[in-house]
Image (cartoon, rainbow, N blue to C red; front, side, top):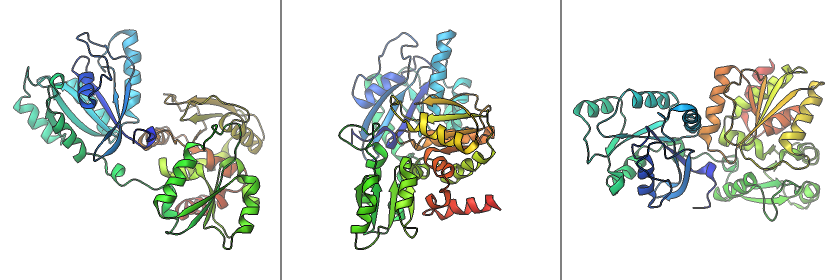
Length: 409
């Protein structure tokens, strides 16, 4: 479980004022010295992450943050980093001193609640002061589960674990499938995996590995080939595969070698559905038709690998979009958790498959784009559209095809 990718873990953000015991709480919970503890306010500067296995929930990621009441120029930077954690938090823990819940904590709760994030209140240092009857009533009215702790002594941690288990978001419990739901048990999926400069030495990339595991978990099986061997592999089979899934970069060749009666899609489009919202990305891809030379396009990538050769996000997709539009576009790039605060200047945002993100972070970005009126799509969906094989690549997804047909009318 310690090797579970970060994007598949339940993200638990720990928020609150400076020096209320957030780091002590995390250290006691993990039984490790994860965060530095000091009586000096503002000891935690950047967010500190700790992956662990928490039964019976499974793999989780705790994120300790700087106090949101930090002051000064440096403090503002710390607060800005902390607020970015909101976007990828599945469960938020607001830590406050047991007798000191006020307007500040209310503001944190209101912001988290507005993002539909589950909130748990930890009333720490309860050996010094106890929550008032008014506070208990208030938290009960707001339906915020709460508990009292003395983190420095490890008291209240079992109660926290029990509270967390009861309040894990349903979408984490009922986890979506990458491809298994498209395949009845006993089905065969043909996976087309190019081996190029960007393929990690000695292994496959994360979306390919996760897709293989998902297919096996759903009692189907797969055959893995490179794009040059696809046609020969298909001819050797006694019956055709139930689906062909390709790396998006090989879409054109794979589409040419795969008979029309076999459903075809890409790993990236599967992840558009698994980590984000496929229908929104389909609508976003249709905005490519409205792009004009000189428009601003943001290429957003979840991981922070060093681009090499014909990088998909830096070189290939910009080239295909430029060719489609027939003129130069202004491309900007972000990596990791960086994402512009002001996205209104972009005519389109093209996001990667987000295999290293949890789903909430990508959904938060989609929500921001909707609010700003900026179309967003993902790598695989944009590639299929710009190469003229959009309907073919969406053939396994009736709902997405319906959106496409409605928009065409």
